[in-house]
Image (cartoon, rainbow, N blue to C red):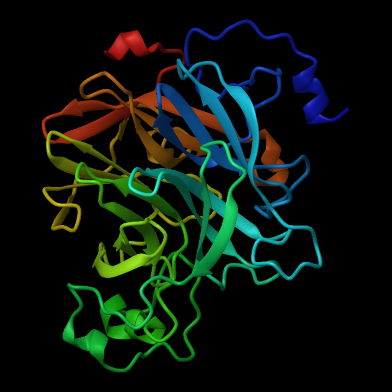
Amino acid sequence: MSVFFLFSCQSKDKYTSFTPGEHWLDNNGVHIKAHGGGILYDNGIYYWFGEHKTEGEAGNVANVGVHCYSSTDLYNWKDEGIALSVVPEGSNSDIEKGCILERPKVIYNKNTNTYVMWFHLEPKGKGYTGALSGVAVSDKITGPYSYMHAVRPNKGVLPFNAKDIHKGESHTEGISFDGGSLPGNVDSLNILGRDLPTGQMARDMTLFVDDDGTAYHIYSSEENSTIHIAELTPNYQQHSGKYGRFFPGRFMEAPALFKKDGKYYLMASGCTGWAPNAARSAVADSILGEWKELGNPCVGNDAETTFHSQSTYILPVQGEKDAFIYMGDRWTPDNAIDGRYIWLPVQFEGEKFILEWKDKWKLNDFL
């Protein structure tokens, strides 16, 4: 019997609390498929976009596309359908069925009145060698979104905080990269310089729109060794050419960024594939640095595995001051459809934010 059938046959009462790690059913009684996702609040409604997984799917290939759900209370979610569909096999499209399409995020551009989706894209059959950023747009928040293009960011442009060594030759020839470590110093290898002619690698990613309307693309780059934070053009569909590199050699992925009291906070994970690890956190007075690491924000049992999850987004609760929700994924790569969601309240101690496990919790508990 399929997982889909088991879920869809269950009756569901209206949710009144969060139960992290349990099956979370939509209005049709089906387990929500919004992995690696993010949320956009628009006209009084929250919209959750994420990767649609399929039963028995091993790893992370895209067979359907990006799913969208809506909610007014964050507990109960309505299925809004597929916002961005992959293209049938044989099309030679960048987003052909079987590609890798990860961590979709959607932001609204009030000047163009369009919704802009960015995602990490790997063309079909090429593993993780592409390290591309895909862009799709729509004039309706739920879609359908039209695929525009895929790029490697900032082709031919050095970051504002590049070092002299980045203007010289690369020293990566013959070196094998495993995604979690590098032989020698990252700067001395000059991966940045190696990729300057083609654009920088961009894998795990998120988006952030600042108070002044400027949008930023935050992504793992330089063989996952370094985080780049790149400004987008006013229409949010390209990179402006202004960007910086941060945490060189720290191998941070799964970035999530939020702002509180004028300070910028970053959460990320280490690079251990599908296996969970201890989270990282950092704070800055400017989104373009300097950033100061704050350590693992998780406390208590299972803190060293981020409660068996990996960050994907930190959600500001609308209408409430200093109320944020950690959104994480508990990956099940052998059967990706059964991935669970770990949502926890973000708490604060001085300049640090912390997460602790809750079997069950309500928004009112922390407002």
